[in-house]
Length: 272
Ligand code: A2P
Image 1 (cartoon, rainbow, N blue to C red):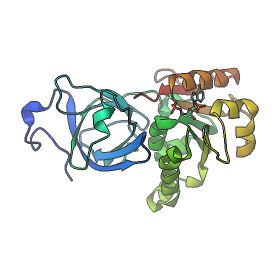
Image 2 (tube, rainbow, N blue to C red):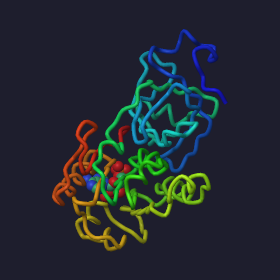
Image 3 (tube, rainbow, N blue to C red):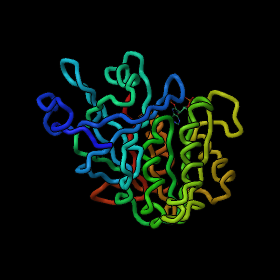
Image 4 (cartoon, rainbow, N blue to C red):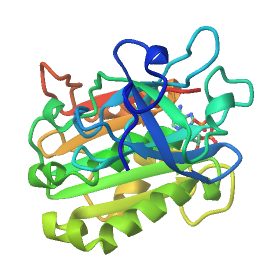
């Protein structure tokens, strides 16, 4: 399927400058709070796995754009996004109703710090996520470069409820079963650690508590955080970022950026 362009959308005059029109191809609702959608990818659009873009919808007097991590890897032919639904949210109240065939707007510039380039080489890469914060990691765990840099890639995902883990569980199972991905990298390097805070589940508790108690490392069978070999990426709410960052710093890891790679990087899971 071709991406919509001003030329073929039949609505050339309406497409704002610097904005690309994406056509929705698939929508999956996981819970009454979370959904995933897939769109066409304009051939001209480039990004690094882990980056985010601004997403909006046509119509309305003043277009509302919100930052969304791209959940698909940079080599993929389509784009994926994972979103919460806020009943009175300026964008998500409408975005949650998109259907295949609908148009979504995307500003053409992708950016962000949850990228491999912002991390120093290491042995183990921890991706700490809560809620929709798993989105940039859904991209990075399908990028061969991540496995070239690290021996072990540990994706942690903590949600309030068990049903909210399903996107990540299906995704990781899909990666491990995918023939093409198994040719591109060693999928056994990928470890998925899930925990839940508000329902019964074999692994219970906030990721911060699991780090502090050492249960995370005991469950994984790895030593505690070590700045010499461990690297981290964090994506979640502002409070989760602040608390997780403090724990990594306490363990001796320093924050990095695109222009100064470090031992960990952070980015908030945007739409709230
Ligand atoms: P909790 O249920 O104890 O609030 P949300 O959907 O609100 O972003 O939360 C997603 C997950 O992040 C929940 O499991 C939530 O736990 C957890 N969480 C919220 N705040 C923090 C924090 N400051 N540090 C670590 N985890 C947090």
